[in-house]
Length: 280
Image (cartoon, rainbow, N blue to C red; front, side, top):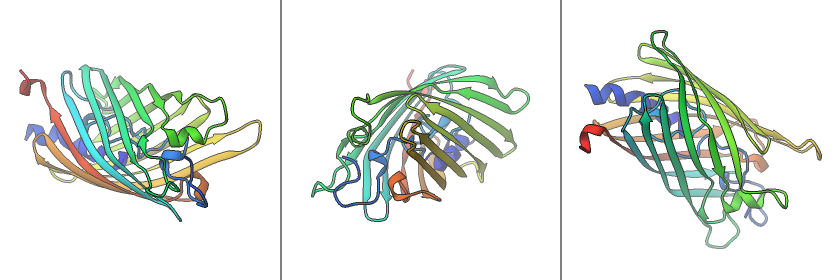
């Protein structure tokens, strides 16, 4: 989902101005996997929430708010998961500062053998722009975040491990006309690392498209057990009105085992953007 609406974030300035796996299952759904998930949360950057960590280095303007409501379906080899609603809220506090939160609801399986229902892994995040891109077109941002694992992901942790951890993504963005390149990397305090990047293009004042690749991995130095997930995703966003956009994305893991969340993710939703002039 993050890839899908990096395009949305790029569109906004243009258009506005003109339980674990479950019994007997091999697959591990996103809600029961402790690895950071790039499709978690809604649109990134200036389009909405900053919680897809494969992000660019843009933020909302001061006083601007963005609310995203979305849904996601993941399908693995022998298990599937639906998240609805996923609610993301972000607010621009200052020219270089943005805050936000992302809270998903996991739809539990009726027979109790699938994903654990309830509130999924949630995020509280800040974002600070170190380089604004003026005049070079190169931006740099850091986005410290707190990750609160949902019930399913908590069950995958060793006994005694807490459900809260700290993450620090660093994002780079290069803009050239209607196109942008972006990349992110960072870590979570429990020992997980991540990296990814992609490109987005402004096809028209209303339509944006993007694609990205991401990888998350973690190694247990004691047992030698390692986790690794790679995902390729792409999507599009369309502004129905100057401050209302719809978006959709498709993601697929590659070179990833079932135990680490191999599968296909389809997501979609809408974003409402409110600028200061609209609330005076």
